[in-house]
Figure (cartoon, rainbow, N blue to C red):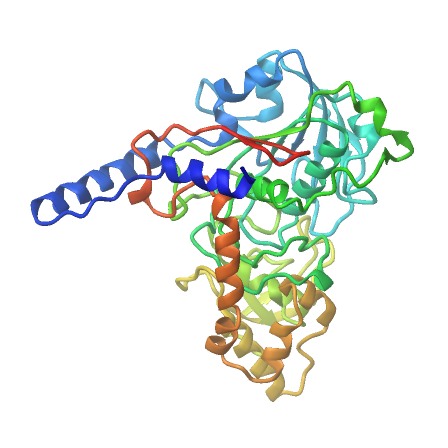
Length: 451
């Protein structure tokens, strides 16, 4: 049976059945749904916390971890502990660490290249996947039996942890190494919006034909990447000059996802650890899908201030009534409009979520009025959008309603395409009575699904 049909069949079997009720029966049903939602939220468990589900898969194996500072779980004393330390405490043979953009400890600024290193606490080698090498090499994988991926995402296509996941899956499949993804909630999971990426605009800030806000977790996206065969598995016969035959003795490459237990996509989720230096809080994460587009313009989003991704400002164009100074800091070693004072609008007080195109349109109009160039990095703006149509629509004076209507058909096709890979219901009312997470496994070579 094709993977999409089989996945759909499995997910439909596990879906909650909604019965038509009236009067007193409806009241009882609403009460049960509310109670179930409260129980689920209080019992939410990220994939990494479900040791019983994946520790047996790691025993006796040489394990490499793809992690950053967000890969934490609660210890027996309810204090956060990094996954590296937790696995070592369980006598798992961790042999190396691989780190994405911002590094293993998550302190490097955006775009700052990361070098290979050694973890001071454990002595483990740290291989950088953000620098000259973005895909695990044969040398990195030579001493590895299984890869574990555990990184907190924010649900936006141009956030580069998704691209790192893609390259990890691809390298693992080519080397016949299994991958376990320990899933985490998507704080923007309630939203699916924005243009679908066109192949001509693919880059490390957008590799897949998905919208800006895709409404999926990295675990779901991992299943989709493999199921839709977006990774190269059999197209090459060698890995960096080393014949693939050397890896034939390794087990068949499987992707296993440990889902978040007791989770639905509209569930509020405050990240316990900042996923990157310039997304320090919930407000920045909610504003990020919209404000990141300004990275392709002359507008500052607050890098080099104490409110990164929580304001828009410019030294000349008054985008708001607040004044705030920009200066180099650890999170922003080269901020836009460094050593100037921004005329800024602080956006933390507004009720803001999803994608708000009017913020872009209003700023563009103000720049036009003063004859100041808005799109200072048009090529990068188009990479973020995944198309040049958004920039052209802004220049043409289209309204936000017209712009978002132009995405409707693509979003409908995407939602249908992603449906077999979804692991979580959209709302609490669809949570099954048995809210225990079910492990999902897929063959990375032949795309055969198992549960």
